[in-house]
Image (cartoon, rainbow over all chains, first blue to last red):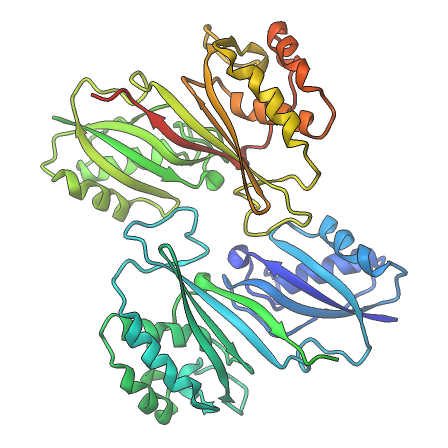
Length: 249
Length: 249
């Protein structure tokens, strides 16, 4: 048995999220279906760095799986891509030690959220960026985002009320605002993110940007530890799991 | 009655082409459905510069229609966009003289064809560029394309055998090769294009680029006036109707 780490990209538009669900098309079920085919029907379990929701995209999701097949490291990506549907792409596959775990070893993640600031919608970006044609006060948004960068915080207010994990303390290391023409990208790097956390952060920052909230409200929202204190959940289709960080080994 | 000229963009992925067909989702039928709604059920006929096939995109398709509604010129785009599905976007609408005709007045067109030259496929571009990971001899392709620029030619060999129009003489004014990272865009400007003509030109130029054909075969292919003399029809999803030219009036 050999353990493999894979980096994968997918267009989340036509998936009911990453994780297997009965009778739904998910990224994990497509991966496991194709691996089972390669292994003559034996089930091969795929573990990922974390789930992504329906409509959320990935540029650098990380998975691992074990296989006894004598396929050279460099051939795995081509073999898998030839069997996978074209909305998933295997970017790379490499040998890792059998102790590697895509989820438990992840030391941090980068998410990006794309906002299209054009006055008119763009039919080619309708599934890849949130169309937000209203003016935004970027300075106020940056000021608000600085409150999150002051160290670990309890993000109970910024995650779905359905979140099952108990420890809701996370550290956001960086929030960057990148403007490229009419596209505004918000880049979040942190040691981990709770369910819907990036989308609620974006929704809240948008409310700051359009003047509905003041940047100085952020500490009080964190303090309340109540989902209803924060802003709306921004739509899934603007969100990308961009990169997963692992300790150098 | 006032005549309006509209510039529209659409993602062709989910349409059975531009033109109305029974029981199919087409761009024209969406436009006419929405205009009928605005006109309390009366049919409003929409004419376009030409059809596009299933899967073909448009950045600057041109249409015209007549309306008695007292809507200011500047409000038409917003009104139509608010009713249209999000894979069609009205870029602009302006008053034109009642003699303007989107199809008969068109003096030329620009089409672009996008080729993704990356080794791995990109799940986000699967409907927006033809993935062609093989090396291409651009110099040979440019040499071949020069044969088309020598004046008017009979393009019988470069259009679908189903083409109904009799006069198959067209003038291609320019073919440009634009490289941007791993994306190669072929830009065609001409006084008009026959059914499938750009896709067959691209398919033939690709056969030159990969060494299957020599650039010098082009004059003989034109000469034969036989579809089977030219190369394959490149897939629809790489093609964009980019712009329609009208004489300055």
